[in-house]
Length: 219
Image (cartoon, rainbow, N blue to C red):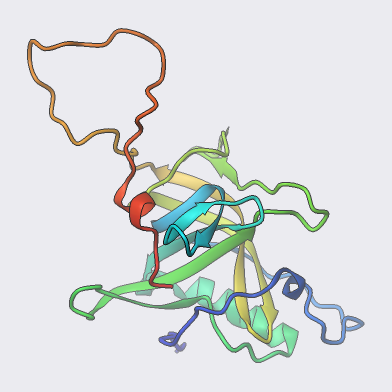
């Protein structure tokens, strides 16, 4: 048996908490994880973002973070939860927040049967340089790291668990894209016999998704 978190996880672990300040003379083995296949929710993995109070949305920010929620059916979630528990036990710290909880339907409040995990990575490395999430296709082949994912894409993730007093954290390092949901480009249907542009210049009127326009303010 294992507990499913249902409380608030709004507090984030600061960068210094990647290396907790407890007795570091006691060596502990780094706990890595690889998730099962899950559904990305509000992914921001092409570049780091941070919340803008002025714009009331997440905006690109080199000092921000990469982030995605990952929805995994409860029956498949136990190994990942066990990895988090292992890291907590090894650390000797009782974290205030956990990086997972039961997913609830936004309209009804009913539980969906999924566990919702929060995966994050800092926009800067420990040395201060720009960080990147490594992307792979379904066959394990490396692909460009600036691919724009949207909610509904099926992915797996790989990283490690860090623990501090404010919370346990699923640090994200690599993402495998199993099924890519294409980014919408227009709301118009095709009209037969009309004007067709045959140029190669890229349009400057890219359509924002609902997520881009509104951000994710629930967490």
